Length: 131
Length: 148
Picture 1 (spheres, each protein chain N blue to C red):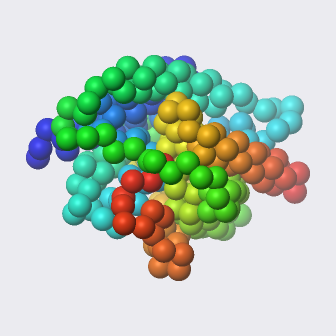
Picture 2: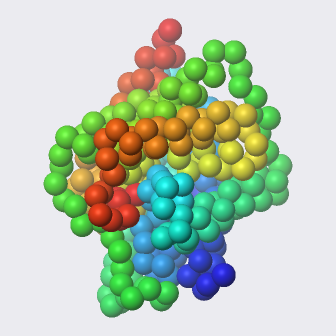
C-alpha cells in the first residue's frame, strides 16, 4: 500500500515539526541518537518509536521478514552500510531528510541531493543486476 | 519522560508504520525500484510523492506558527549552498543504497525485527557515521541541525 505508507510518512514528518519543531530526517536523527544522545534525547525517542512502529506493523500485517543474509549479500550489506553512513553524514541527509522533508520545504539543496542519490542508486543497482 | 520526547516517540512510531506499510523496509522492493528494466517497480515514486504532498501542505500550514508546541523555536536547516560535501555525500549514499537496498530508516526497522540483513547493515552504517565524524569532521560544525 504505497499511498497509505507515504501518507503516514508525511503525517509523521508534519507531526514531528509541529510538536518538536524538527525535520524528520532519519540519518540526522540516528546520528544524533548515536553521538549526541544527551543533548538530543528526543532523537533517541524517535529512533525507539521508529523501531517499535515498524516492528508492530510487521507483526500486525504478518510480514515479519525472515531476513536471512544469502550468499554474496554480506559484502554488499557491509560496504553499502559503510558508504551510506559516510555519505549521509557528508551530504547531511538521506531519503527522508532530503527526499521527503527537504523537497517539501522547497530546498534546492535537498532536490539536488535527491536527484543524485536516486540516479546513483539506479546506476549501481541496475549495473549489479547485469553481473 | 517529557511531552516533547513522547511526541517524538509518537512521530517515530507513525513513521515506522508508514515505512512498513509502504513496503520500503523490504530491500528487494527498493532494489526493484532502483533496477531499471522490464521488471522495474515504480511503487517508491508513489510513496515519496504522497509523503511529499502531505509534508508540503503540513509545513506550509505550520510555518504560520511562531513556534512548535514543545519548543521555543523551529530548528530547521539553514544551509543553502550546493557544495562538494552535498554532491559527494549524496553520491556515496546513492551508491550504498543501490548496493544494499537499505537507507537508514528501513534499516533501523529491520534491526528492530532482528532481520539479519538489517543487523549487518546497521553495524556497518554506524561505523560509517563514526568514521566520517572522526576523519572528516562534524556534518555541521557547532550545531546538530542537519538537513536530515
